Length: 248
Image 1 (tube, helix red, strand yellow):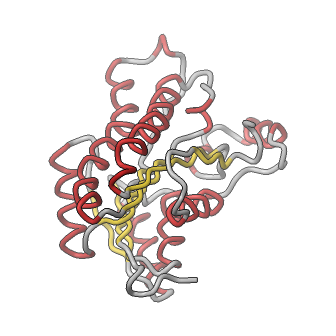
Image 2 (cartoon, one colour):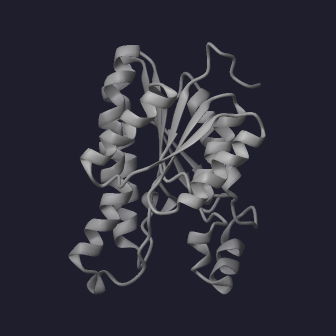
């Protein structure tokens, strides 16, 4: 059931131009919410999501920002607030991966992975929370990974950043619960996205066979979980695995 006028919220989806981000944006728009689709470099992907939403009668706008910079995060929120209203639901989905041995990773590469996956969530949460606290209402969903629950070989920085998101989720749930703000986390497994396509067909086939449900996840699977967590009013501080049983 779509949200009516009184229930409609402004949803900010960071990393909204990628496969999972687009699916999340469309899912919230289908519930009747207004959606801010953030992107950094992939303007075409963000615009495609907005156009798809508009074709179904929804409202969505694309906003650029480098979320590793505090001033750009503030500019992003200011723009969203001016055009769509205060952010009532924040989806921290922006992320990048880096594969290789830790001993081959430079400090700059390590910092970039942590900045995009973890620091951006900190900056966005810090910017969104004052308005949510004043309203005594709000929801944050952080998109982590099953590799944040169990480290992945040759993805040390990614695993560390995604584990950090889980810790941030649980700490903020305790901190902000008395203010009526809920904070939860989605931990996707192997999802059929362009980012995972780089693993190659053989590796993806092996991961599919290791998954009890014997398939890869879809961006829509993750989007459904994010919507559920935004609407489950007595759920906070939880990590919802969307991994087909890969990690139990």
